[in-house]
Image 1 (spheres, rainbow, N blue to C red):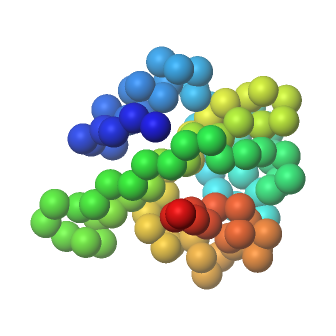
Image 2 (image 1 turned 180 degrees about the horizontal axis):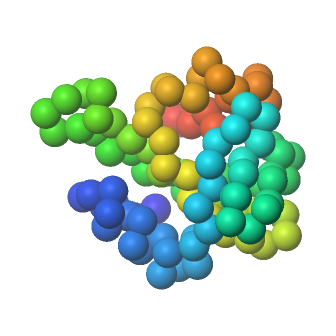
Length: 101
């Protein structure tokens, strides 16, 4: 995986590499309103993850998930750390959990 200094730098590079669909996280699925697409946890894989810490405020931390669906659709999810945990199904929490070796 690449190392990025900023969130914008990461998003620009991911888009250049074909991750050009923006997804929203819903309780039990990913949603792309502009394309009327929904992906459930079994429909996609997380292929890259990048975390960014806020310089002045720890609450400004964000994570980018680069995902690919089983049909080959590539996109990104941008979310704040931990915000989704209370509003997601156990399957989505498990899918979005980043495990460190």
